[in-house]
Each structure stands twice: as C-alpha cells, then as structure tokens.
Length: 259
Image (cartoon, rainbow, N blue to C red; front, side, top):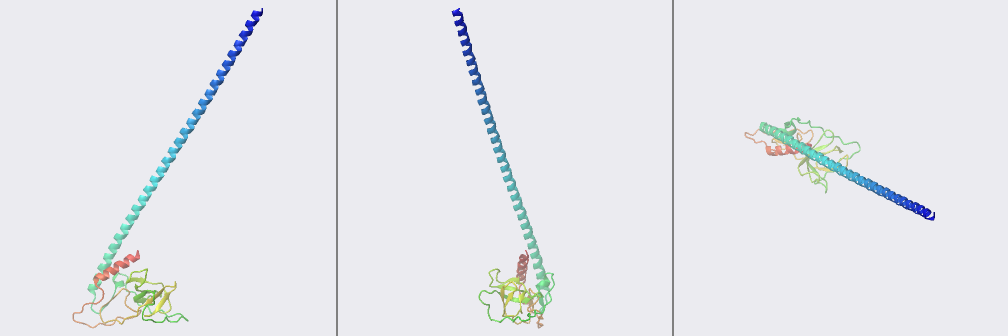
C-alpha cells in the first residue's frame, strides 16, 4: 500500500513538472511572437518614413524644375521685348533721319527750319515770356555759371514755364543733351540762374545775336517770340547750321530719351 501511494505521488509530481514546462514553452512562444510583431511594426515605420522622404525629394525637385522653367521663359520674353523695342527704335530713328534729310534738302537759303516741324509735330508757336510773379525779383545776371550749377544753352521758355535747351556741366546728363526742365520760378533771361519748383538750379546762357543765314533749331527758333531775321539773297548760298548727319544723330538721341 505504501509503494502504491509513493508511485501515485511520483506520477503527480511528473505531471506537475510537465505542466510547468509546457507553460514555460507557451510563454516563450508568446514572447517571440511579440518580438516578431514589434520588429515588423518597426520595419513598416521605416519603410513609411523612407517613402515620405522620397516623395518630399521628388516634390522639391519638381518645384525647382518648374521655377527654372519659369525663369527661363521670363528671360526669353524680356529678351524678345528688348529686341522688339530696339528694332522699333532703329526704325523710328531711320524715319526721323530721312525726314530731317528731306527738310534740309528742301530748305531755301535764309529760311529758319524747326526740327519739330520736320518730325511731324509741327513747329510750336513761340510763347511770350512768362511774366514774373508779383513780389518775385528778377534773377541777377552773371557772366558765367556759378560752381556746381548746370548751364542750358540755346534755350527757350515753354508755355508752362519750363525751359528747353541743351545742357552741360550736369552729372545726370551728357554735355549737349537736349533737356526740358520743370516750370521755373520767376523770369527767364540769358545770363541768369533760374530755379524750378523742385529746387533745381540752372544757368541760362546769354542769348547770342542771330546771324542772317539759314538757321536750324530743335525748339522752333531761339528766344520765345523772336522772329527769324530776313536773309540776304546770295547767288549760291549754302544753308548754314547742323549737317544732316548731326540732325540724324540728334533725332536718334531724342527717340532714345523717350523710352
């Protein structure tokens, strides 16, 4: 009876040990499954991040390509517009030079020729000098331009009070360039320093006496309201004044100033 009880006890112990081993194996399998699942999730996240990085890189490359194409198109358009403007300017300069040449060829000795009329704009009427405002003193006359004050030669005063002529001694313009100022304050007279409404000062060169010869002017004559002096009738007089080449060069310069 004792041996039977001992055998039963040993059998029960063996079953307990087997159950413990089975439980341990089950826990090990569960742990391995969890590790495998975590590894799979990490790999999936890594693939997702890699795909996102590739997508961002592709979008950036496409944006750069699009910007480069837009910049190239803008440069091409600007170059085409510049070429068209240059071509138009050259055509207008040729036309103006041809008109000036015709005017010079048709000019009679002793005649006063206005290049404004030759360019199709018609010679502007000579306006009367603007009356000085009440209480404004006439500018003092000097023989030479003060230091730092640009000189305007061959000038005339326009209806609005502005001055048109050829400037020299200015850092903003080439010597001999045709300019028109803003309206001045007070009276315009040769040998005087005048001032515009914005404060700019100019020295008006003294007006020289007109010679009895053919006269060419860019501003329809010399002083405002002055009449051309009658010229003598020489047998074979050659018109004085700028050459056709000079007229053409001045015309091209005026066309460029308009752009």
